Length: 475
Image (cartoon, rainbow, N blue to C red; front, side, top):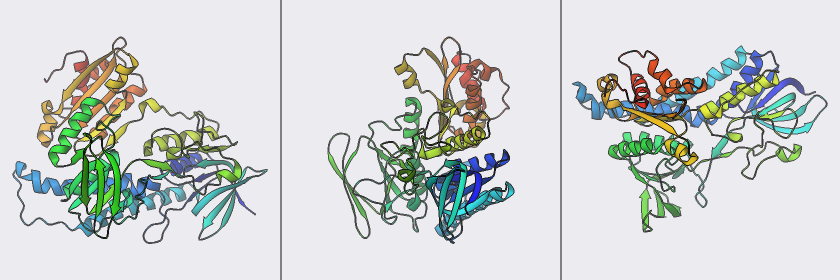
């Protein structure tokens, strides 16, 4: 007889495991199914984010930044070091340890919240009197029944046509995280978040990095002032970024990869690299879910079709995260997971897509929330703008990191904050204040009137708010 649960979550990435925990907190009987396996053959919940995405990339970014600081910038502080060496195996090993700790943390949370965990893949099989029959395929075959099903199966890296991933010469984010040696030359197709972050990691460690981007503008969706500042900073560091590129051919050989492409001026170009990372977006992971068997509706791109509350076309079948519409962000998935669990329990879960922050963890960091200036212009909305450079911030000077600025956009009449854009030190942390203000529909004047500790980077946010009313104090 199938084991019965109030909720079965398929997938234990940020959306899935968060949904499972919140549902358990609300008193529901919960099971979670996930197929990720560690290199040691153990269950590795956490999805792409924990295993080959957010967490390991941040670990490598931190390690590589330490290395670059020691080699390039510590002398400014009067600190000199001789005989600096890099143990890449140990650096990668630290990353793997961080990943394992997060895997184990999720398994602990499942145990703490009395969530039944099943290591394997989950597929919808049939509608039953109880709810839905789900087959778990793995080391141990299991049949589960659920009153409610939450699909949280995430996404996979998109392959470039004609250049499938082999994780040796042609890499996805997975392969780029575990290179066994520092490449002399690394090519990256795609100047998005993942491409820029991984490019930064390997450049800091010594690789010559060339990034090819199809879009004519660098970081197209990002506020233009921020994008220009970011491109200037990354180019100064040594990232060779080309936009408006059209890839015509990719050939992998035993020891290198050759990329034929047309540049923005229409000229034919050739790039030969040791490894090529392809980072051109992600596709929803719905293979093997049983959508055809039970009639779960997918759109033309393979996403599970859901309404504003994450309900699918099937009764009591929900979907969250990368497998549905909206930004493919771990924190967006988490918020949807919590909201769905609360809706199942009869509460009123809520996700505000207008206040979901975005972050690029390069150096300088880039973070934004809300509308960009070009979006406001296109919409014909009247707005005011205020900005403040980190060059004029005392804490940034003390840190020795004064690149970038804070930019705030506010409604011309009501002063409601419409967008906040930051490029500079710790932008990923500073953006939270903007998200909070916008969630409560606050005004730039609200930020300007709030006391910020001195000296802090957050004072740049306050000064940008003061600049909206043309009354900065420190510039």
